[in-house]
Image (cartoon, rainbow, N blue to C red):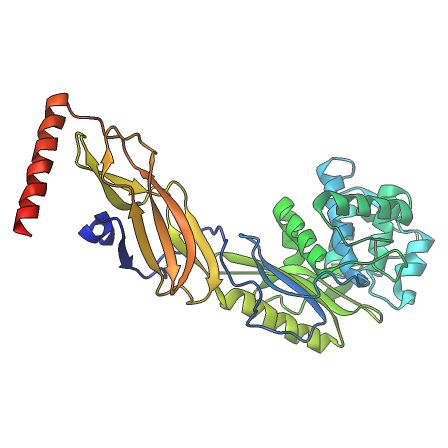
Length: 398
């Protein structure tokens, strides 16, 4: 057991340990943030680790661009909120207005659910049509059915944007079709995606469906990363916005969320999105530094019923780091021993320092794992005499 060796009981003891053996939930506080080992041709991009919130990549992440169909993520967020509040139901139906049919229907030239004019469509079908088929007509029907008009629904979208912290985005309509008041950023879209994943995990599963059939017409999901590791979210394209994507993917217990846009073609979008996904999942790992309750070392105790007390960390501490970067990390224990009894359980008695080369990564406080009571007065006097004789003996030998 490396933590029970005499070296760990000294004031400046150290042991070189492999930290690749354990991976747990991360609390990331160390990672070189200015240099990324990845580059993309996308003019604007942003990526985060979902569990830790660590930014893994950013490039002009706050650049305001037209949202295109990526705006539909906010449309869906509002619909999910209305369902959760009980103001609408999944089997409730809305009528396909002439505005929805002309603006977002088959003759509009954009992505459509092919909703027949005057037909009644359920909220559940509209949700699937928006997420999977990217139907502009479906977003307009939903907006008019929920808020009375597209403009009123846009007000709901903007209120939700402010609520969840989208600081640089604004929505002028539910479809993402060109509008002078519409703009988003990649950073905000990742925040929006995180909201959907955390708040509506069951509904989020719809984003992974590869096709949807409505009124006899089957359409495939446009997300090029489905089947390659991603489980959502949405593509977008207009002439002004270029080709964009917001996506999330999981591997080895980790999830990443990323967005990129303004690319010149669907092929470039698919290629760069796959590269970014692989970078986020393969080039980083979660490394456990210490687990809560784990005995790290011990401190010597004077005048106690025990001559030592085990030291432990009070919380689990891990890092998200570039793969292999902490394989030779060094753990150095500095304790306050010998400490005078009594010792209270939980009393801070030392530090665990994590170093990689000359860089200190974390200083983690260590606490007494148990209480140590004082011995009797006579026992303490006897211990003092023994310590004195031992000191004189060592002095003589020298």
